[in-house]
Image (cartoon, rainbow, N blue to C red; front, side):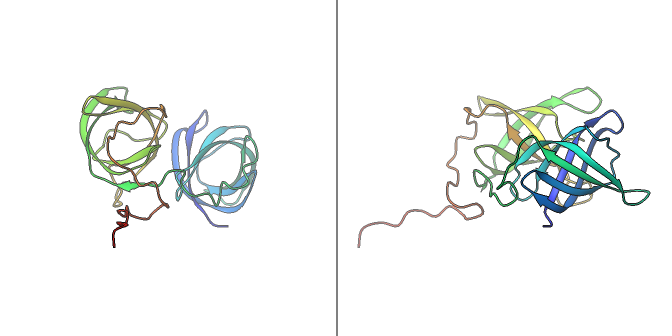
Length: 201
């Protein structure tokens, strides 16, 4: 089953890394992927399902040299997750442009604070455009809308040169907080909001 995924994290051998790839095989215990990043058996990294944006911490359980540049890497979940590969996003995304203020620390350790705009939202997170300071996933940022603020973890970063350049995907760290203050799509993932039909004839 070919599933687009993002593998990211920090290891002693490779430092901070972020690599997009796809699965070769999957099962309830994890996946086999092809990676250029050099990892060791036992390393803990993160895997994100690009379609559902769901992520899991995984352990490198298997390595096999495929070529001089790439390895086949077996990634194991902490426990079996039978429906991970077919699961839809827990909360669907709602296309919405909102002005926000993002603050955090860049790759050089310098503090930054800037305005940005959301592209789409869900209860769990958002996609934000206009952030050029972040270069690797895993960082924690603060997003403020009006007087509301919430901490998020950066789970993916748009590839330079693509139409997702300067975009980041974020996942909320404080589930009880809603900073958006707008109605969100509670229907099926990917379907637009549809106003309820009037019961009047």
